Image 1 (cartoon, rainbow, N blue to C red):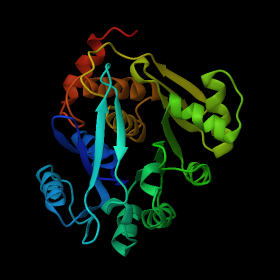
Image 2: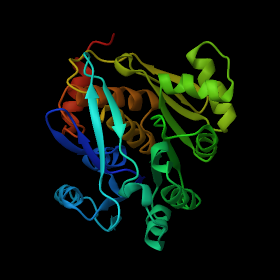
Image 3: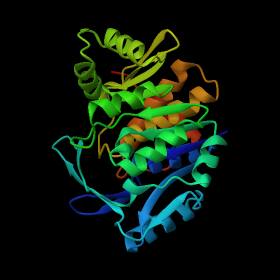
Length: 296
């Protein structure tokens, strides 16, 4: 199995340290740790930060040939602020190198040869990367959208286009409420909101994350729930990315949806309990965590 991740690769700048991240890279690294052939289509600057990212990617044995080098724009940076509960908020610099991912035959070829493409709405904030993404989606076998509503980096019209041009949608509960406002959906329960969005976007696969309270998955006509796991949060950066990678890995490899969402919530919690977006876990660690934890 091969999965391509498309979009931003950058540096998360914390008050006292910095980490390499970006949702596509975080997802790809988690997929690779689970034995899935993964790669990232992105762009970094011709600067020290970009070179450090390329070194980091090479050390983790992800392909480098899907990365582009920009000689005009700098490598992306995001200022990360943690609140009293260590929940992250982000100030995303613009424009930066990953806003200018160019259309090439190599990009289209790697997407066409993959079993799925995972992309976020954030990667389409600029016309150049957006045009490349939309052309790539035309060649994709299975399309997975990770909604990232980071004001002011999105607009309703583009968001609707992306959501209607995908097979699987992942978003958090706050983003679900925002989407319902945009689509003028007035349902009250989370289940009915999900069904309404699914109908609006013509998909039967939607997952909503609920922070420490787990997640809910609408999958081919059935709801699957996980109520979360008790952990002490260190920081939430990358937790949703590892959740998505684990969930998609499970579903595409024919795990039952309930097992897939249980494992995804477990890995998301384990990431939130450690510093940084990409701590490494073995399969046995994940299994033992699921078995040992008491759900809320």
